[in-house]
Image (spheres, rainbow, N blue to C red):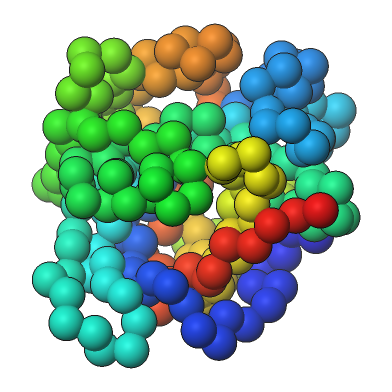
Length: 236
């Protein structure tokens, strides 16, 4: 179940990193539209009778393998477009419908290892005058975005919907004919409110889904540290 804290401890992660300047832009959508795009074996999760979509721009920082192995630490902007699912084993989690990142190395590795739909893009993340601006476009000329928001006050007591939308601890992908589950562990999200000043995106339409309406639900988190990504495992 969605929760504030991780559902399992990852003793031997395959990747460690930080997530910084994380924005969550959520909106509901008809469940059947989402279900048609999911990997076989997954069912769209619902809240109040609707599936939900989320655009999440952020900075991946200090990306490294575990155990102090020699590796140039990577930091780069990323944006993912996700939805929420239930798996055949009773677990819940997220599915990335599209992802853009500015690291060619990370993009190729994620596609090859777990089948995540990463695309290489020219992305930027800037912070100035109390505003955070996320911008980018895929290298193939498809899928772009420009988002400017103003982080607000901390959310002292997240609502059940806040937790449902952010407290997910597994990623699902279908790769080489297998449904894979990848666990994640990190501190609870330090959620805050936020106000969007500018929002333009074509990522949702690129995968055949409606974009955010006039008033999407917004969350913001300055950073989560000690993110540990576990070994992917087969479901079923």
